[in-house]
Image (cartoon, rainbow, N blue to C red; front, side):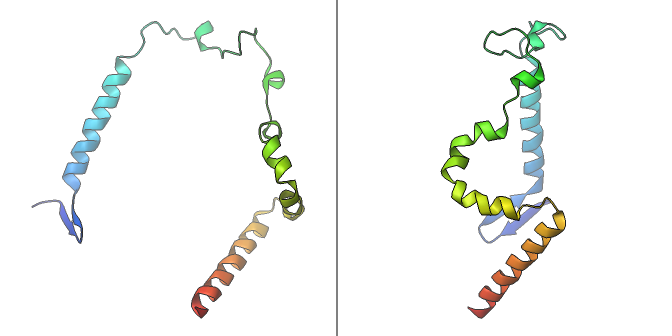
Length: 112
């Protein structure tokens, strides 16, 4: 059969996958085209809903990650403090750490 790839646990047919992708894509496009007709671009419908508040500037509505994850970072601050000191922002440092950790892993796996 054309496009059939037999494996140890069954088969994989590329033509079946292409047909399924086209069918799912057609279903998605059909659902999208039958969406809400009352939507109007460049009106109040496109503005974000901020709990009924009038328009707020981006600076006033911004919530930083330090606020969102405050409880998490506060609970683990003894773990994060040494990591913050190691953080340089230099990609060469991170690449070096990756190479070092991978070398240690390869040594440990090779010895076992």
